[in-house]
Image (cartoon, rainbow, N blue to C red; front, side, top):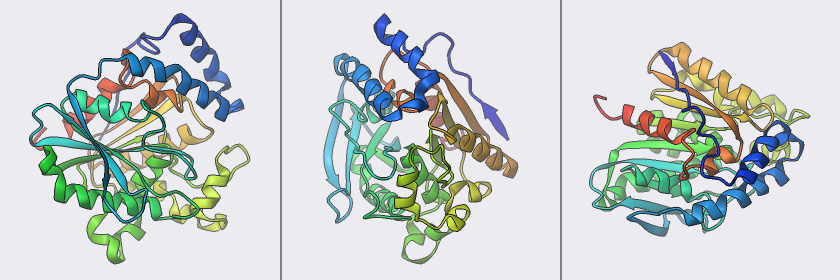
Length: 319
């Protein structure tokens, strides 16, 4: 079964000054012409807006270790009086080669803060980068973090039996690999991985196929993470195993994406719906780009946030 979530009309870029709204609107159609410069411009636009936003009564437990590597860290965002809350784990992007769970003082912390402001316990997750941690290193780090969460999250007010895994861009690739790839269901990782260990999966602008096509601006990251042998790319791509997904999923793409990611998202959604195990959801976030699709969470812009909260509510037992 499948569902398509529609954004609330007229909310894109709400709360931004008129000049910034015009800048983002003009940026969209030319997003792929200079992704790095456009990404930085989006961050520069949203950072002061998020800094000025009301943070509410949310406590943050920062820099908690879930493993032995220096990047095996997570931050926990707790609403007031947290007890038995659904847990949302967010995995940031960065083209496999870069990125931090706290890119700056506001981004990507705005994502778990948004979830916590809606009564959820949220985790911001750091992981190792390529080439140090090549495939399936990112997914293995998620497995280690989720193992820690299952053991410890109740002490922070979370329900270890109701965990939603969400990933953006490369983080979405790692999340989907964790949930689906057969390599995560063999050997020492098997008991900690697989979609049966989570209650739902959210993939936002995720790289769901390995490719080094001429238009892929992150081809270097694909090679660093998945290797140089393109003959193996089908084998390591999450989309290959999409029909095996055992939990409900929400697949989200921006109107203005990094090349191919919207196509891969649509393909992944098509494949998971063929299994007809769950009511999955697909959403294209109009007017937004690959970076603003997460940077706007926590602002007055309602293009994506309410749909995420509604999906998470649908994963509750007996929902």
